[in-house]
Length: 401
Ligand code: ADP
Image 1: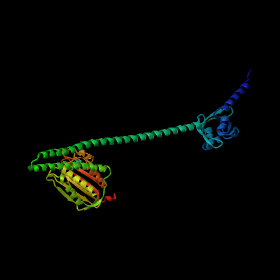
Image 2: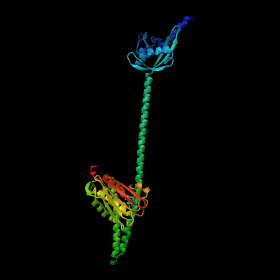
Image 3: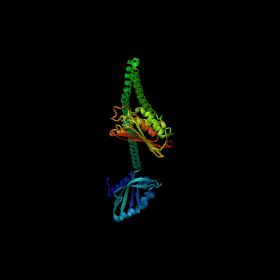
Image 4: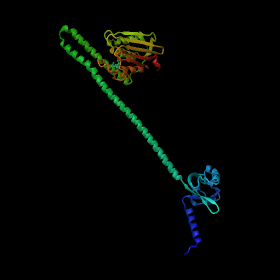
């Protein structure tokens, strides 16, 4: 069978028509002034119009509000300047269905020059599903990032907690070893005194050896007192740790409390050591816990005497206003090495220059806690070889704290 040119051209146009109709993307042709000429089935499905409802209408009927009002302007500008914003470029736009629903479209427009006029062909691809998937992926990514951030923060927090726990564990171990070395030293000396004195007493059997027996009995008593002091410190510390020490304020006479504290510290005084009192007239009374304050003063006065040579005085000063009271205990003793000063209130801490003096390194730690419980603060200054001065500042009435 032979095909004429006309047959061929009809065949071509049928094929093109079929291609146009069967395309999965919407295809719309429009005139240069923006009127729809042809639409395929996919375009009808996309916008929910029948072909007849679109043909002859302005193409901006298919656009969302903004483009709909500006479309004529776009065409005009293109005709005037020849500067394309969409033609031959392709763009993501928002389409509008007959029912008003708006949806994202990828639009590719090309200009087709026919013999007598120019038309535009638009190929429209619905990207709703793609957009939705993209949004979901973005959301998943954001969720994932948030989860990673949360996990990282949790890990960091855990790391900080572990470091703290490790630090506490180390501190505890260090405390334990400091305690053991202090306890073995502080127990061993008085215990060996007790043992040697007891052995000697055993040998002094003659009646005229009574003075010797008495001397050793006194040594035993001193050693036992020394052990009791150490155990008292342990007890105070454990009561503090359990939160069992509470401040019970009473109106006290400052001078009277200072002098009873001096009397109770007398056991620590060396030969020729005297106490110089420089007490101000005010404040005469103070609202604070007398037990805690007495413990603090005895400790500071004992230290001042303990860490000074025989004959060196200990000065106690008081000062204050109606709002607070300061009590200073000053000595001219061995002083505290500068490098050791920052650790003075640490538990079991003893400065390097006190090896030959007995002590637990607990006193100042307890003093510091007691002063805080009374709502006050303690400070000190010291110079190696010249002496030290400890001052306790207390509020006049801590019952309001
Ligand atoms: P202890 O006297 O039982 O060792 P403290 O806690 O009372 O324990 O004192 C801690 C350390 O502070 C002492 O070991 C000593 O090194 C130093 N220290 C305290 N008071 C004085 C002082 N008045 N002069 C010199 N050093 C002092």
